Length: 109
Image 1 (tube, rainbow, N blue to C red):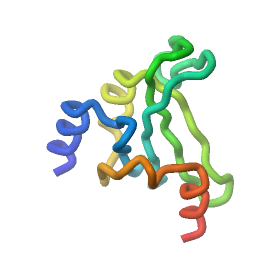
Image 2: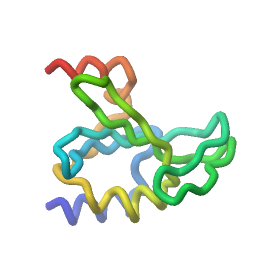
Image 3: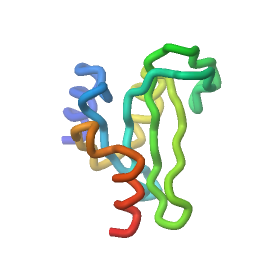
Image 4: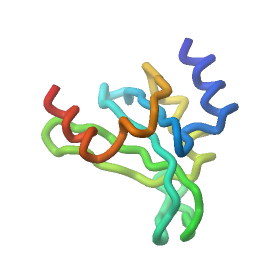
């Protein structure tokens, strides 16, 4: 099932502005992948290349019970090729459920 969902995520070029990806890392941490437009220069957490201002990219937010959440900026291709294959329990969800406030509320469930 995860393989067909991975293929769908890549085919539909998710995450998008309307749909996000929810999954779990190999360590059991929940992540949310969202699409964003760069408002400043970022470094991709995978390839360490520049994400230029105005570029559409993926923001991966990791939900941690104690530290809150952390986030990393990635090129969309880096997310699909490097991060996505290592994730389990994939789900496609509405992007409205992945705001910072809602993610922080989930820490205590």
